[in-house]
Image (cartoon, rainbow, N blue to C red; front, side):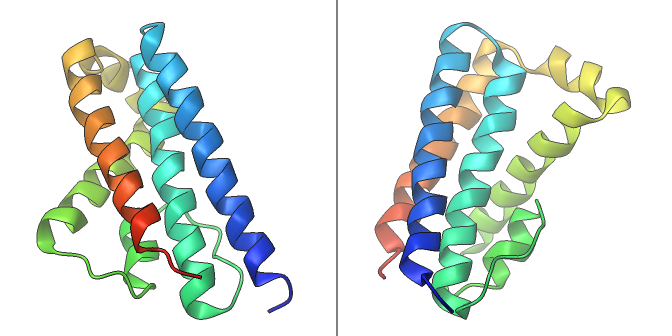
Length: 131
C-alpha cells in the first residue's frame, strides 16, 4: 500500500478534529449531534487500525463492530457491546424515523455518559496503534 503512514495519519487527524467538534457540540447542548460526531471519531480510529493491520484501504462502512473485528485489536466482550451501542448513534441521528426518538433520549446525562466512554475509547485506541 502506497503512503500507508499518510493514510493512517489522515484518519488520526480527522478523528482528533471530530473529537474537538463533538466537544463543542456538547458544550452548546447539541447532544444528539455530539454523539453522532463521536461515532465518527471511533469509526476513524478503527479505520486507522484497519489500514495499519491489513495494509489496505479501510472499507466504506459505519459498522464499528465489523471494523474492529477486521483488525488485530484485542477486544473484550464489554468493548464489543460498547461499539455496538455507539454504532447506533450514527443510524439514529441520520434517519428521520429514528432521529426524533434519538433526540428525545439525548439529554445531558445520556450524552455525558456516552461521550465520556467514547473519549476513553478514543484514548485507548490511540494508545494501541503502533505504526
